[in-house]
Length: 326
Image 1 (cartoon, rainbow, N blue to C red):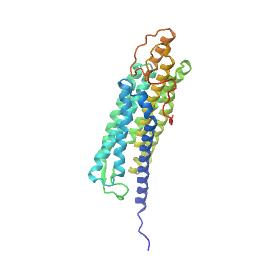
Image 2: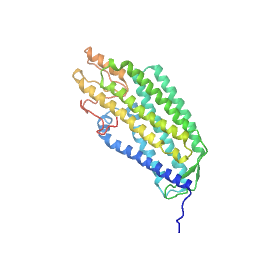
Image 3: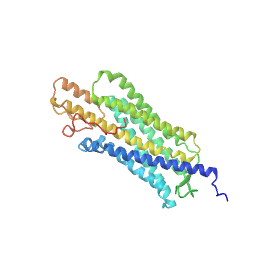
């Protein structure tokens, strides 16, 4: 007697559900693994740092990711979930995901603003760009979540929550994120090409290296998500990469801050014979002031925004993460 077989469409959806669940496990693994690799650097470079905008943004981008990845793991793997819990979970997870990517965009925007010596024109342009994208993505995400319909799952042992929705314009969210990332990459390259040869500084070198490498990675993930949303006809497949994109925003922007702190600590240690040099975050313009002050023999150096003296907690050999992804 032949065993009963599932309809091809159901088998296809089942395979997609398994793949999506696997990607969420992979995202959680990357997040935890990177956290373990860089925790010692966080304790050395971030904890002694005085509280300010840079430190707050670091902790937000670093730790909020654990909230939404936990929500999505429960959503995908908890077979004891009550059907009524599906909507609150996906809603909460989606908004935490949005908040995490938004915070990451502020970090890279602030870093770009600093590359241009805190130019008010660049600052206003980045504020306007980010606010415009935030408003648009809030509207698009809210519309998407409102249209989701929860139906009985065809394979309850694989996924408890199953949704249907009409074709949405959520792909525009990824297009808007790509616009910000393209602007950041363009501004970084423009500034880097014009000043790279004239400035010999590990801090500024770190700004440009991380800027180009990390933002190209983030742009590639956003572009892949955009293409997936445009071409796929499966709602499940649309859920394949959003959390992975969010986790990579968390991992890479946290590493940007850690690398900057390490580079600033190296600069402080190298120049310590001239007096106490305060470490700097996101601000090569201020770093240039320090360099000019040192060269002119001025040892009375002021404190700078987003930084605190860590010369007593690091040395000239500071490096971030033995398994650095950069």
